[in-house]
Length: 447
Image 1 (spheres, rainbow, N blue to C red):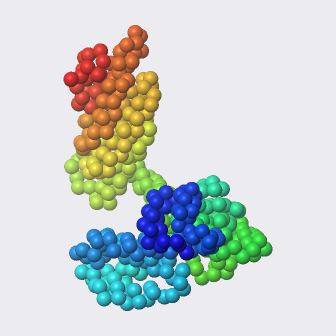
Image 2: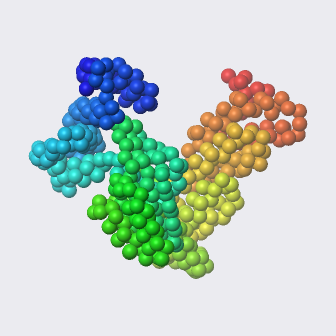
Image 3: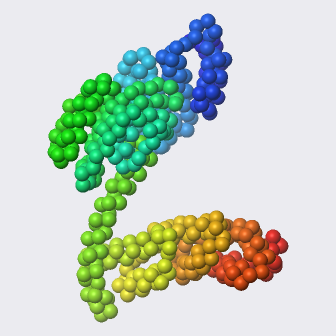
């Protein structure tokens, strides 16, 4: 397929670094035999062969073979490289080299009994991570239940061209059906696939994918599943999807890891909101009793202590997350925490407040004339300094210094009461941030 296979393998790094169509065309122009041009299928096969070679090289990454534990990150990664090489080899040649590989891998045992041997590790972590075009479509189908895609979109190294899509909702339940063309930017392989996914709340997600079987079959699936879902016959909708897509089913675990975490967070948010609402009602109903017992120095029942800790910390976190932190509200909550002997989540609250302060000063950098924001920032930084836990203000201090150097001189040169007020507030902010603000007319004069 190539004029000089070894040189082509070496030059393939240029394609790895730049997957654009222009880069591929340059590679093909140099390395394809002039008298035997390849059609689209041939080019896809060639790219798969080159990727097979690349992963066969990657699986010998040395750090993966000098290990203390077979289930460690480095070793699992090189086994993943081997898994990709096996996947491509079986697609290209139709053999079953995976079986022999697992026989050999099973002879390597983990030092941790719960992880078993190399074959167990492969089945638990490597095999589920293998990606093909139907799995990309399944990812698209499931994630489309929670987020919107454009007609042409991308999921990592795959391009998605949506040709039809329908989303239905009924309470917490959702149904997504459609068809889309999925294309790999790595191998240029493409396939038109139909999909269906249903979410019944929490983690209960079921999805199916198959190659496009024609307009009539697709229209029938879409009509039947939509009708059953619209009638709130969710078991029937799932049975219809199973009948159309066969035994291969996908669920929340089928999502790519980054998206999986994002969807889990979305699901947990609504669940946590319900739990927080219930606990907050309990707390508010019995707060007077808790304060009375606390003032008496009496022992508080453990269940009420846990509820109080959850509600107070949650209220503080929400206050810190808001784009308009109110120090007076924070002061009230801290007073409640002291009186009711609530243990504060210092690490979590510090992290949240730090990010809010960073966002505030970034907004001020973009719009320095926002005096109310500057005043609020002065108040919140002063409040942060008085909290019973430390807040890392390193990034805020760096941003302040940039404004000290680049923005303050402009206000100093303006002869107006508003500019003088801005400078006063800005100096006050610097003092709260433990930064010595020079009295010179320009910050650039600081030694």
